[in-house]
Image (cartoon, rainbow, N blue to C red):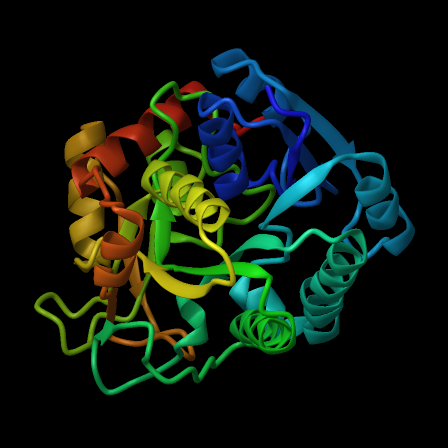
Length: 340
């Protein structure tokens, strides 16, 4: 095994943990750097139960410059996968300063310390929220960026910083991945979406209703111009998303002076009620729901154009909605209260 390490910021989170597992399965040497504010330290033990490997964990915050500096000085890091960041859309509207400080300032500190250490390879975890609202449903990488919430705005600022770095330092290798809606869990049921409090996303909410933690699902709006009136989104299995990170990193390692932006989704959209029906089928549990008012900023439909990722990385999503629901339900059944 090489003594060169990949630094994975936020590697204990939902997407981070699945990507760390994928990297270990590819025999990569890793350092996970996480403050565990939206994850649990025992996630690391569960990753090791599935696949043991060269994995070191450092607990700390990305805004702590002295600690970030120490990590780059102490370890032979040659690339970074950057997940660390606050991610709740509704919370970002209530606490904008918190989100700009953690997401933007934290990223700036990371990029500056990478630069000082001569580390020039990074895969950045962005989001389809950077696109915002448009009068059409299919988004490709050239769709204008008009984020409507603070979370999406922080992702756009970080993307802009990386693009500007590449203009003056063309030897940096940068891959920006804009994901759509990750759901599902690892097939072992050992790691999955583990919200520490009220779930902000559809699938963990449905799962918690199915397991009896919540009485009903709230469906925000049923008067959209879609077949059943509920909003349609592009859902991708988290394992497919993790595979895209491995392929993105390998692509950067094999190519010089590169900057690419890629959508990561399935290119299909499903309505809220279609997801509910698919989950009911997978779990054999009826999901009670209540229609409530639309949320501000929600749009009728959006889904990804993923041709670029497929062509560049030779990556294709493998898992359908049925499998996403099946894996999410297995995770919830094995962990009724999440990871405690």
